[in-house]
Amino acid sequence: MANKNTIEKIITFLMFMFFSIWLGSYIVRNLLIFQFFEPENLSLRNELKNFDLSPVYYVIYPLIVTNLVSFLSFFIIFLIFIIITKIKLKENGWLLIIAFLIFITAPFEIYLLFKDYKIIMLIVDNFVNNSSQVLYLMKERMTLLNSFSLIEIFAYIFVIALTIFKPLQKKK
Image 1 (cartoon, rainbow, N blue to C red):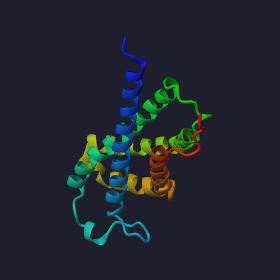
Image 2: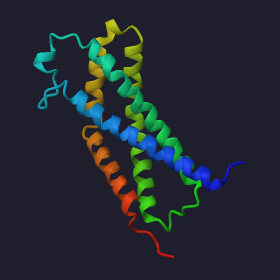
Image 3: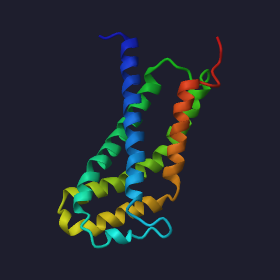
């Protein structure tokens, strides 16, 4: 059996890798999808109304799949990290805050991932008939929890700062 320290390092590496992939794809996807709509009323931009968006959806498809898979992987690996590592949350306030942020935002993100899953299925299935439905789901995902996506992005950037600076750590 491998050394426990090696397993912890592998889990930590995987956790940071999936976190980075998820956060990057999350920001890019939100910025990209927001470009389809007018900022004031979230109606489709005039220049896109007579344009077939099917090829664009196929370009966005890997980004949505990456976002879905990387968040679920990150969340599961984070749970394993908390269980396996010897880090005590009482002595490491920074990790306790990170755990709270992740566990508080996870149900909302998982709910939004169900919307992403519906979008993925529409793109994979008979896409030609579902083009307007995909656009509707993208708009609904943006408006569903209003500014949650922006709050989540800032919260997870704060997670990066907490990981780097490690405040509220008890000195031994």
